[in-house]
Structures are given as structure tokens and as C-alpha cells.
Length: 181
Image (tube, rainbow, N blue to C red):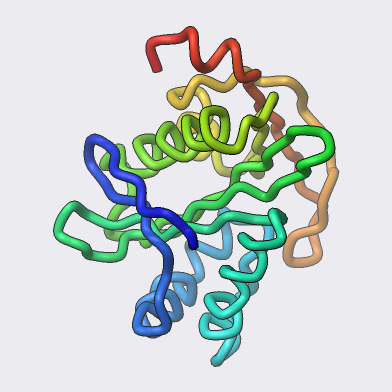
């Protein structure tokens, strides 16, 4: 089963279907879709339930591990995941936060904790992440989590019909585990 992980400011826990209305509410905010590559706007009704129902099988098949980001009291703040490439011992980090929880350090705390889980429990060699260049706050989360910028991909994706630049970050297991992050 998907574990529950504690960090300094937050808890990472499996989603439940009871979370679907808040997921729908948070990701329906156009600002969330604007700064993320894969969240559609408008966010279709029923997609939150479909997304949540996919988590356990993806975890059991070692394809993806998805956690809710919650306050210590259990309030849902957002989501974080590691898409897994087990053969190459590689994890791709992704996340979103509800707008009321931006700029409070929760996402950085969640990223650090999930990366530690990826390196210590899943025995990954590398974790990488990418963000839209138009979302520098996401890059700061990656930097504060111990990642180093590895690349800048010009007009690499199309978002809302416009070409967008992508910034790539990454960190190796030994770098992360030997750092004070």
C-alpha cells in the first residue's frame, strides 16, 4: 500500500475519493493551469475521481507514486508524485499546490521528503523535474530541494496554443543524501 510520510511542515499521504471535490476546486483555478504543463483548463468534471482511482494500480505496478500534500492536521494542500522508470532508477518529480498554500514552504518540504523516499526506499539513482520557464517559483522549489539546473529547452512544449520554454533540474542520489537539504 502507498505509505504515509511525515516531514517538517506537512504529511504526504495517499489520496481518498473524499478528496476529489477539493482537488476539483483547487485545480480548476485558472492560475494553477497557467503555471503547470499537464493540468487542463477548464478542468473537466469527474477527472479528479478518475485521477485518484488510478493511484493504487500505478503504485503497485511501480510506474508512479502519488501523494496528497497535507497539513499536520490533515488539510489538503496539493499533490506531489514521482513518475518511475525502475529500469533506469529514475524518478520524475511533479507537483501542484492549491493557491491558498503558495509561498509557504509546503511544496519544498514535500519535495525534499518525497525525494528522500525515492532515494532511500525506492533506491533511485536520479530524480529530475522540469517547469515552465514562465513559472520561476517552481524552479525555486527545485533549487531549495537540492536540484541543479541541467538544461533550458526552448519552445519545447505547446501550452494553450503557444510554444513554451522548459527548464530542467536534477539531482543524483549521492548528491542529495550527502547534502544538508
